[in-house]
Image (cartoon, rainbow, N blue to C red; front, side, top):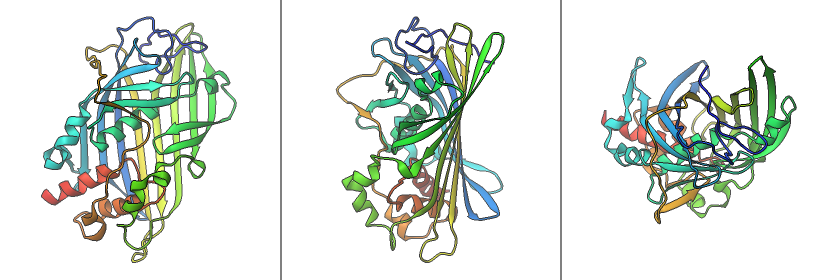
Length: 343
């Protein structure tokens, strides 16, 4: 079991999120991210197509309520080539600028309920970098009110990177002699999300006009998050571990008989609450607050042409042409496809 910090919150003691009264500014938390993406083009075969690994550092910001300085280090993006071997995307020229953006520090701001308000990034940040930082910040949100009413199922609307979506909380609480453990499950009803950027953004309609035939339709879009939080008696509550599973099932294209099933498994684990890496202070006139995904024009050569990796290209086409869910990993797939052309 990892060590615990002592950062206090009004009403609830929190190791991370919604810090109201920080008693120390010396702690920098380190988490490890692992995200694995599978695609099913054959119903009997799940194939890994993309892998993302990174270290995440967060330091409480005493100058801004409920916020953290954050930084990503040792970020690796890789695609599977053959026989279980992976190609690191850093070898590709099209990853130079996103890689530099990933190294830029950012600020994460939560509200008093523990939900994400926004992240603050550089105005020229690469879309891919912004979207990954949004994902990490979203995964480290947990509603304080739901924890107070532990052991009861509750429906709470939460801001995530595609819109405001109802999350059904189920919380189990286990008390031990010196420790309390919270098992938190959040299931999102993605069909009831509001403020979807893809529905109210002028750039999305022009993007969809480039898609083949009609826009894509998904039969299924499920998102579930499991969290483990622990608390010592009269001390802080810490987010120890987070797992997000997201499943999207698409109807076949007009010229294809196969459905596309995309599965993403993303985990974040607390490694330590003491580390020498301190994210630098980061606020200036070039900063911008972001709460939703950043989209860019789709790569028409992928939509209209043939690529070496059918699994990647078919997944990219489905995501890019989905009128309600341009997935946050879409640009990762684009970079991987273009990298594949070189190697």
